[in-house]
Structures are given as structure tokens and as C-alpha cells.
Image 1 (cartoon, rainbow, N blue to C red):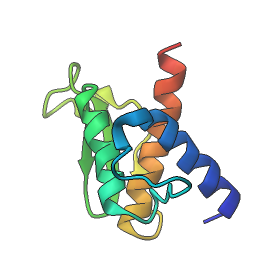
Image 2 (image 1 turned 90 degrees about the horizontal axis):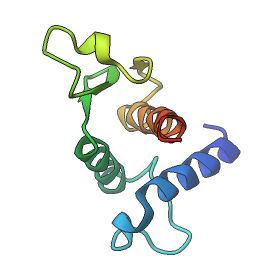
Image 3 (image 1 turned 135 degrees about the vertical axis):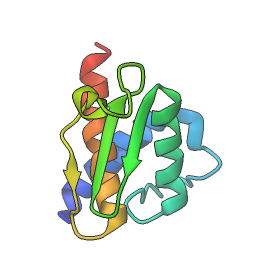
Length: 108
């Protein structure tokens, strides 16, 4: 992973999480791409906002739960399907980054 993109995207995630993660994140320690506990806290927040995250062995889907049914969740995707980047935590991390960028544009 490109170190600059990693830092920028981890800061994006930190801003999205705001004070939600104060107990998990020490000053300057925003390694969401390396820490399952921190990353799953972000997934939890996304789900509390009404979006589903379906995590499979090689893909991650993020969809609007209000518009989705089991058969039509592909019609309610809010970001493109994220395919296996290299390891599962990175795939989920990229899905989170794509979602936050989409979410920030949508709420404006």
C-alpha cells in the first residue's frame, strides 16, 4: 500500500469516526488498516447509519439497507463491489474508505 494514501485515508476514517473511537485510538495511532478492532468499530458505525456491509472471503458489498431486500441488495449498492485487494483486512479497509468518500459527498 502507498504510505501517503494510507495516511490520508486513515485520517479520513478518523474524521468520520469523530469522538466515537477516543477509547481505541491514541494520539497519532490511526492504523485502521492494521487493527481489526478499530476497523470493525468503523463497520459498526456504517451499519448504525443504515448501510449493510456484506463481507465475503474475496469481496465486500456496501448497500442501503432501507432499499435492499435479499434478492435486490445489488440494486441498492452505494459503492462498487470491492474485490480482494490482497488480504481481507485491506479489502474491508478499502470498502470503508470508498464508503466514507461516497457518504461525505452524499450528505452535502
